[in-house]
Amino acid sequence: MTTYRAPVADMKFLLRHVFRAEEMFATMPDTNEVNDELITAILAEAGKLIEGLVAPINQSGDQQGCKLENGVVTTPAGFKQAFAAWAVGGWSGLIGSVDFGGQGMPKVLSALIEEMNFGANSSFALYTILPTGVTLTLNQHGSEQLKQTYLPKLYAGTWSGTMCLTEPHAGTDLGMIHSRAVPSADGSYRVSGTKIFITAGEHDLTENIVHLVLAKLPDAQAGPRGISLFLVPKLLVDVAGNLTGETNNVTCGSIERKMGIKASATCVMNFEDSQGYLVGELNNGLSNMFTMMNHERLSMGLQGNGLAESSYQIAAEYAKERLQGRALTGPQQLDKAADSILVHPDVRRMLLTMRANIVAGRALSLYVAFQLDIGRFHEEADVRKQAEQLVALLIPVQKAYCTDRGFESCVLGQQVLGGHGYVAEWGLEQNVRDARIAQIYEGANGIQALDLMGRKTVRGNGELLKVLVAQMDEFIHEQQSVTAMQPYLEIFIDSKQRLVDTTAAIISNAVDAPDEIGAASYAYMELMGLTLYCFMWQRILAAALMAQEAGSGDREYLDGLIKTGEFFLYRMLPRSKSLVEEIAAGATVMMAMSAEQF
Image 1 (cartoon, one colour):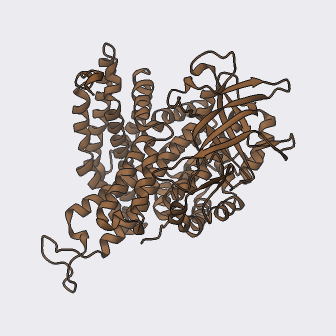
Image 2: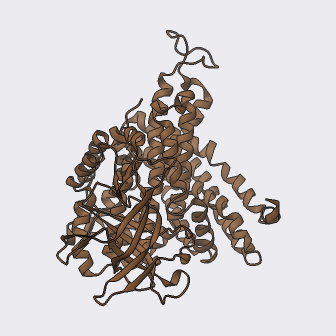
Image 3: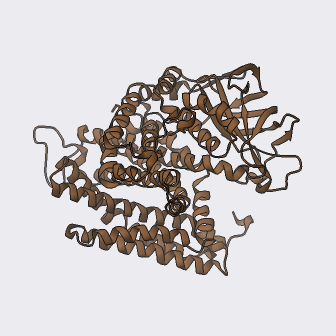
C-alpha cells in the first residue's frame, strides 16, 4: 500500500506562482511577515508531523473505532499521542488571535494543513478543525471575559470544542429546535436539550470540551430569529479560566455506528440545566454561528480534496506497477509479460480526471481561503467587503463541488485498483467510506446548491456573481498579450459567458415560477463549479507557462501540469454544455408527479 505523502511541493507551487501569496500577504500589515520562507517551513513541519504520526493510525483507527463506556468516549490507540503532539506543536492556535495566545497566521496556511490532515486521517482531522471554528466564533462574537477565559486553553489544545446545532427532529430547519436556555440571576443561562450528530462531542483527547449550543429563551419568537448561541463547557470553569472540578450536566448519551470516519466520535449530547454563557446578542445565534459554519464548510471541501489526493497517490502508484495486457499500439514493456495498466486509455481517463479535479479543487479552496484572509486582515473597507461577497458566493460551491468531486475521485481510484480497491488492505475502500460524509454534513450538498441558487443568486439578482465575473475579466485582460494562453482563454471566455447567460435566464424564469429555483439549483451549482475549476486551471496554466518560459522549476512537473489542464479543458469542461440544457429543461418534468406516485 502507498504511504500518504503530504503534497507540499504542489501546494507551494500554487501559493508561490499562481496566487503569489507572499505579495498578497505583504499588502496587509498583520500578515506582512508571512513570506515564502516561513510558508515553506510551516508546511514542511506540518507535513512531517502528519506523515509521521497521523497517517500511520488511520487504518487502525478505522478498525478500532471509538468506544463509549459509562459516559466516557475512548478514541483509538495512538490518537491521544498524536493530538498531544499536535497541541505541543502549536497547531491548534495557528490562526488564532495573538491577543490571547494564538499565532495570527492566515487561513490559507491552515487550509492546506487541513487538507493534509484529511488526506492522511479524516477522523483525526475532525478533532483538530472544530476547536478552530469555536475560537473564530468566540473571538468575533464573544465577550471579553469569555475570550480571556476560554481562548488561551483552546489555542493551547488543552481544551477542544464543538458546535451543537442538529436535534432529532430539526436538521436543516433549525428554526424548529427545542433546546431551551433559561436566564439565571448571575447573568448566565441554564441550557437544556438534546443534540445529535455532534462531532467530537465527547472524547479523551483534552481535559475539557467547550460546546457552542443553539437554543431559545422561553419567550423567544418562533423560527430562526428566536435562536441564540451559548457557550456550554463540559466541566465548569472559574473566572480565571481554571477547572473547578465540577461537572456541568453535559453527557454523551450514545455514539453513532457509521459508514466511515469511525475513529471520530459522533455523539448524542444531552444538556440538563447546564450552565451556559451567551455568545453575541440574543436571538442572533444562527447568524453568529455562521462564522464557524463557513469555516467548517470550507473544511469539508478540503476533506474532499484531501481524500482525493490520498486516493490518487495510491491509484497512480498502483497503475505504474500493475501489469495487465498490452497497449493497443503494441507492447511497451518488452522485457515483461505485460504492460503496466497506464497504457490503457480508460485508466488514464480515471487518473487524469482525479488529478485535474484535485489540482483545481485545491486552487479553488485556496482562492476562498484568501478571501477569508482579506476579509479579516485588509485595512481597506471596500476590499474587505468585496472579499466577503466572494466568500458568500463561493463557500456553498466549494463545499458541494469539492466534496462531490472528492468522493468521485475516491471511487475512481478504487476502480483503478479493481478488486484490490474493494478490500481493506490498500485503503481505497476506507477513503470511499470516509469521503461520503463530506457531501452530507455541514449542510447537505443539495442545501448548498439551493443556498447558492436561491439566496446568493436569485434573491440578490446576480449581484454576487458580478463580483466574481469582474475578477475573471481582470484575469482575461492581463493574459490577452500572452500568445500561448490564447487557445485556453477562448475556452474560458465561452465558459464564463455560459454561466452568465444561464444565471440571467434562471433569474428571469423564477419571477413567475418559483420552482425553477430548486429545479435548477444542483445543475447550476455544478455549472458554477466547472466554471470555477476552469478559472483555476486558467491561472495554473498561466503560471506554469510563465515558469517554463523563465526556465524556473521542474520542467517535467510543469509539463505534466499543462497536460493535465488541457485534459480538463478538452475532456471535462464540455459537460457544462449539457448542464445548461438540463437547467433549460425547467421544473415542469421534475414537479409533475403527485406525492402518491412516488
